[in-house]
Image (cartoon, rainbow over all chains, first blue to last red):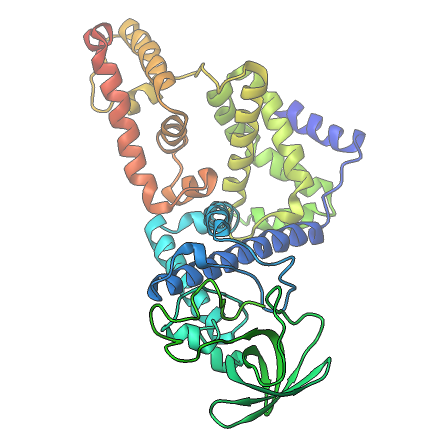
Length: 246
Length: 192
């Protein structure tokens, strides 16, 4: 049987014109798999980071919108249910990774511990590099609220509250309550609350990216009743202001 | 002093086989016997030949994807294992239910049990085979590879894609399960 088998196998290879699949295909598939796994882990890390932050800020998961800051919110503004998805995908990616990269040889608990560390580190990196756009309705009085909804609000720009001194279609001048004068660039992407009509002299809250004395506005909202604004029961309830929301 | 030409290693042959069919033939020669035995234990002698042939053809196509961190032996065993399980599922709708055991295997599996007579030995083989069939797939695979094929824990980990340090406990658990199954049956107990 043995001699026959070798002969049969070699004959079949010749008859079927079999050739070894080129190495680049294996490398490509491997790279795609690992990239997909890395992407899923990154999503998991972002989801975890967002949810932890919200809980720290006494918010709820319902407050979370997760999406890349550089993407248009119409397409990337996911509800908290995304967390469920990313957790499931995270587990899937764990399984796939374990079966494709010889990680199956590593004890499961060591792997889980390493992955937790990796996810937490990834979440920290996500915050540190400010690649994410988390928006919260954390409520008045929260530091997050004052900074414009971004945990690293200073890096993103945060919110400026001030009086509209002058305005054209695309350029507004706003004097902040801290005495700075800001040129506010308004684009078609800038968000205004529906029905808002902001005349010169009105106090507004501008959220956007800062560049020296210029703000590229992501959102502008009228502010009424500055007194007790940050206090519980203030006039700017969470339903009125959504800090950081474009 | 006898001078022997140094035989190429499996890994060297794999590299050569990408361009040289004879090198692949040498690999087939080296592994067809152990792989055929393994496949026969997994799926029966009738289908073992098909399984091994398919496995070698699959291996030939995937030679360029061979992971040099693995041994060729472990890689081939994994392919044969997967091919056998897939074929069994396709043909029978379930994993294989018939295992061909020999006396030596039975002795190893039943531990330090004395087997007094050939007739009894044959009876015991049947009982052990039935017991193995009642085990879950993973336990049966572990026992076949560790006890029958004599594979190291590291190789078993590569073949079944499990953590190395989980193989030892798995082997112990599988043996324990098998012995419990055998002891639970009165007829088998009398045979033991």
